[in-house]
Each structure stands twice: as C-alpha cells, then as structure tokens.
Image 1 (cartoon, rainbow, N blue to C red):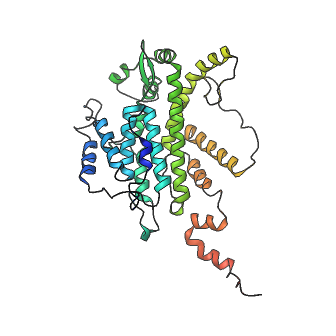
Image 2: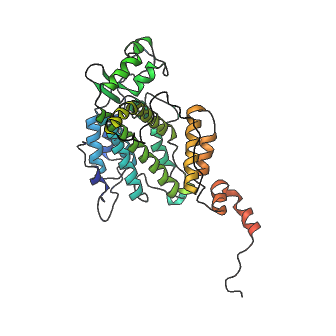
Image 3: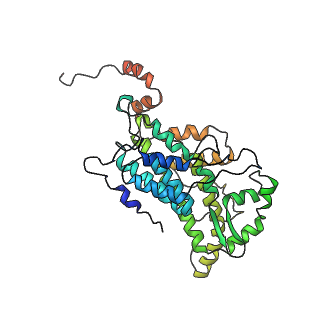
Length: 358
C-alpha cells in the first residue's frame, strides 16, 4: 500500500486559487528537475557504464509536496515515474489515476495553463504527456516510462528468482542484447517455472494493477478528446500496447493457474484472464453492431490488430481519428478535419432564415 495519500491531492489548494501557484521558477521545483537529471556518461555503447539513477524516494517525496502547492502536470509525471520505480505497477496505476483525476477536475486551470489567445491550444500539455509514448528513445530522458515498465518484476519465486517482461522478451529473442546481457537471463523454461512457483494472488494483483493503468490512460486521452481545442489529444497508443502485452503475458500464466483453481472449485474461468499460450486469438468476432459504442469498440480491436501484426500500417492512426468523430455531426466533422473549408460549407448552406420572418 502506498504511503502517499493520493486522494488528498484532488482537494483545491485554496478557495481563491484551486490549482495553486505557478512553480515554473520555484526553487523546490528546480531542485526536483536537477534531481531527475541523469548523472554520469550514460549508455552510448553496450560496454559503457549506465548513468546513475535518481533517488526515487526523494523524487516522490518532493513531487508529492509540490503537488500540494500546485496542480502541475510536469510534477504529476515525475511523481508517476517515481511511483512506478518504487511500487511497480501499483505505483504506475496510482500515478495515472492522479493524472486522470486532476485533468478531469482541473482542466481549465491546472499548469501549464492553456493560452486563451491561442484557442486554448493544449500542445504544451500534450508534449508533457508524450513522455509515456516518446517517438524516440533517449538515454537522456529521465523518465523512460516504457523501459521502466518492462523492467518491473512480474513473478517472484524463492527458488528461481524474479523476472520482468524484458527478461521474457530477451529469453524469447524478441530483444537483441549483448552476449553478456543475454547470459544473465535464463531460458524460458526457468522463467515459466518461476511463474508457477510464484503466489497466484500476487500475479492476479499485478494483472489487475495493469488493467487499472490501461483504463486510466484511456480516460486521459478521452479528457483531451472531449475538452481540448479541435479534440487534440496525445498519442499514447504505444504505451497502452506495451501494457496490454504485459497483461497478456501475465494472463497466459494466470490462465494455467486459474483453470486449475476453477476446476477444483467447480466454477468457470475468469473471463478477464487472457487464454494460456497456444490458444489462438484469431477467431471471428461474434455479434452484430447495435450502437455507436459497439462500433468504437470494434474499431479499437482493429487498431490493436494492426499495431500488433502490421506495426507500420497507418490504419490505427486513421481509425483513432475516425473514433473521435463518431459523436459529431457533419458541420463539426468539417470543422475538425478541414477548418479551412468551413467558408465553402457556409456558402453552400446559405444564410440562416430570419427567425422574425413569417
């Protein structure tokens, strides 16, 4: 259980200033940023020494204290990565829950604030959140969310040890590493045995924590789609896909364990558990589309397919754009997709009739 009272951060800083002060040049904030800067040369070649990690407990403490003074998106991100390092997927879930809650409650005034002279363009906020799904990987990035999520231990066996999703990918040959790094990771048979020797309750907890994290990321993008200028939102699909792949990995091991437990109890398998390895996921999607919500869910499944099996395809990008337009009328769609064409639409539509004319 986290030592940080996340719920307390949803309270207004003060009645006069609910989001508190701008801490961009505050000494405590600048000290936090220095704390996160990589120390040492970092990894440029495989045989060079990795940069020294920040003191994550200190990062979390300073971030929490700053968030009591200012609802600042940058500090939320620092707090979230510190929680991920300290508490694993439970910390990631809690940090993303905080991110979601602050955006939902304080969108209009949280920091960095929107510029009313620029149509409340959310670009600065989008750039901050892009740390979850950066376009390029840099060792100078102090957060490295993707790398850190892959390094969280998924199983914990007293006999075989603890192994992460990255270890599994290395063992399967999905990640290319140096011979020295490969020698530090056992074969998949050992990792599978470690999962079988781990407490099923802990595996299930990790599965649920990842599900919670996925839900909160989705809600964050929804806030932007609903409230940002022209429905601009950060593209966090890469990070979501990583979390779903980690969840699938856990689900495969839970599927084996849960099936035995369910059989002993005479019950059904948990539908939330991903089928065990070897079970095909390529069957037809049953049922008909009855509502716009059904269509949106199907579009998301199509996006997931292309991201997994055709990663270079532009289909997910286009479909996610289409998802945002489902609830809009024709005029709103034109405004969203072709703002410059609105004058032509107005010409075709003609003037509105005078309400006072009989």
